[in-house]
Figure 1 (cartoon, rainbow, N blue to C red):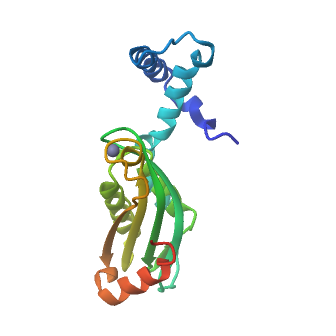
Figure 2 (cartoon, rainbow, N blue to C red; figure 1 turned 90 degrees about the vertical axis):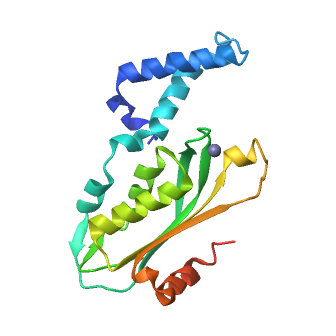
Figure 3 (cartoon, protein in one colour; figure 1 turned 45 degrees about the horizontal axis):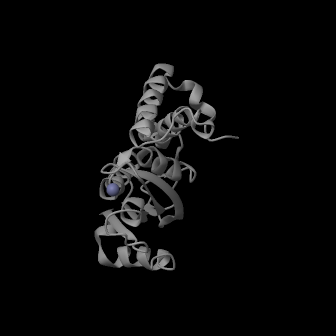
Amino acid sequence: MSPYTNLEEYNLEITEEVKSRYSSIISEIGEDVSREGLVKTPERAAKAMLFLTQGYKQDAVKILKGAMFKEDYDDMVIIKDIELYSLCEHHMLPFFGKAHIAYIPNGHIVGLSKIPRVVDVFARRLQVQERLTHDILECINDTLQPKGVAVVIEASHMCMMMRGVQKQNSVTTTSGFRGQFEKQETRNEFLKLISSNLS
Ligand SMILES: [Zn+2]
């Protein structure tokens, strides 16, 4: 199934508006918008941009609440290597990488597939990596009210790789911890369990 499947839900007026702006941008950079390969580009770019920012219209709290189950399990639950694609709000260029998330249940667990969906809701917006980390952390903490939650994100930023300093291999790591993960011992256990991924 195409990732653009639910585009029908998008407001056609907005798509038209964004499309005409892309058309102007393409002309401004010195291209011929009527060239065969570019004829449909403004529309495709508009739909891609709306897809990549659809998180504004989605509700992460609702996603979590829709799949919370009473359960006595109270060991650490870790979801590693969650693929993440976002747009930096300073350049509107992609940053991408992985999120590693853990929580310690406090009477409730959540369907495991919901955690990556929460990541998507906050990633599909104009973001900075620090706020993205914080948004995911606070959402899980407030909604699930676990005994602790931890979020680590490692990402490469196209705005650094393709322009400016051109540090092509740098990876930015951000992290946030709440509750029991604020204790060194618990935090270290989590970091050890995901450490095969951290370089
Ligand atoms: Zn940037």
